[in-house]
Length: 100
Image (tube, rainbow, N blue to C red; front, side):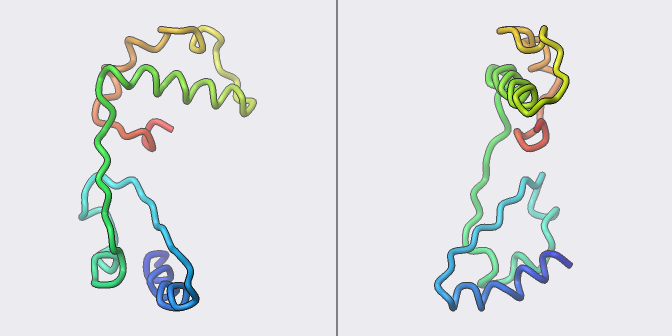
């Protein structure tokens, strides 16, 4: 229903000169509502790769620091440099959106 509402609103928004961006983290094209793939709905698709093994610990570290800054109860040990190195291999295939 949300996809259809967005698509119904697009012509009026574009007609008024608005720029519209719809962002989603999807495992594949089939995960998006079929209406989004019709002409004039989505103009661009930007595929993003999943983080590589060497990038994952840093991403996890940044996410933990963000949560701590937001007031979440994050174990101090997790905030130390290198604390999440072993977790990099455990989150293979997850996007940054999945991890967040």
